[in-house]
Length: 302
Length: 178
Ligand code: SF4
Ligand code: SF4
Ligand code: SF4
Image (tube, rainbow over all chains, first blue to last red; front, side):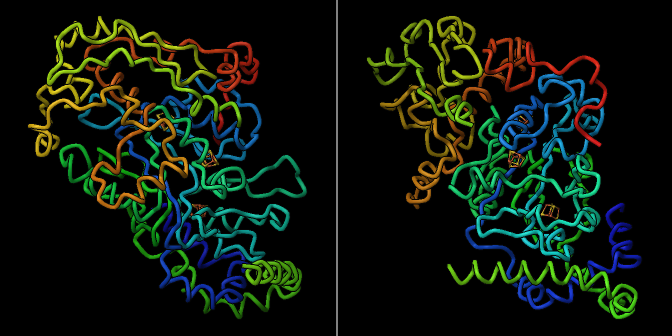
């Protein structure tokens, strides 16, 4: 429900900026609603039945992404006593869930889910985000103005902010190891580090087949659902679980429509918003068009 | 990153070569006495797997770990559908079937190219070890923590920010999240 409230907030009070960006990107947006993700996008299938909460994935991410030293060792499992969220210092965290009626807890690794139609991207009015054909949702911190719209738009509470520079906080989140690995066809650091292959890396469309096969082969073990196959228009990172998804921290009320289409509903409020913030937009528009131009140039190279 | 790369994809020295003389079924005591598993070499010291002892605790039922490959009867109904009568195979060592470069482009391309391959979702070598060993250890109440089997190298301590690389005590309660 929290997400709904957030969306209401996004629709209603917003931060007009997001609305403006939706206008400027409406063409894109309409195209993307029938697009459903890049055909060869990669993804990761996270199988909670295998996870032991060892935090090797967290350590690997910390190293790969050059994040600051953690407050506690990565082998200190006492951090699992409290539910954690991703942050500017930890692009991925593992949480533990006690399951009623089961002897064993389940563990869930969270990070950016790399949505097919990312709300962070559509809500960003300086076009800081890009969904790459490989499936990663990456961002350009140099154009980020630190407005935090994406943080509100993301249905999974993923983007965090770096406050190391008070004047210019920038978004920080998991980038699917795009720069160092994914773009070279290599699996992310966390995937490679996991001792139990909780994280299966492959083409998203293959992962859906694999997930269904696991469910079919072990109907007593798995819930009959791949979380992320359809949620919010589909995500590149998807999950299998042996407990109902709402018992392991998933929001099961998100629906299958991309958050984008919810955002579209408040287009009607835009004119009013525009009259309030024209000057502000002029500035943002400059940034955005600069970015668009860059993108066009990139595209024409392909 | 080089380190993790080496740690995961470096030479896998599982010396299961001693397994050569194979008949249709396995005989207790045919297996190696000890197997050195060195595939996590960068972060952890090698593990010396007491194969002889494990033969004993499994009552020499090779299928507990080696599936159908030694010609021993398996119980999993799914596997039985094809392997009830398949007999012993030429390949027995874990690494012969479980890839040590799992998820690298080459490995994914190999699977992609073989359209009729049934076992498309076969775990890599590292997961094969950990899933097999740990699930059984848990069932048997045997030691199951990372360092019960692996002693960490200095590089391993650095990776986990532990030992000599542990964060100063004063920093404690924050713990990574908001
Ligand atoms: S999970 Fe959130 S941050 Fe990641 S792509 Fe989706 S909307 Fe964006
Ligand atoms: S994909 Fe890369 S950036 Fe994302 S959680 Fe894994 S290691 Fe971290
Ligand atoms: S490394 Fe794998 S088993 Fe360990 S906590 Fe992460 S996902 Fe779970």
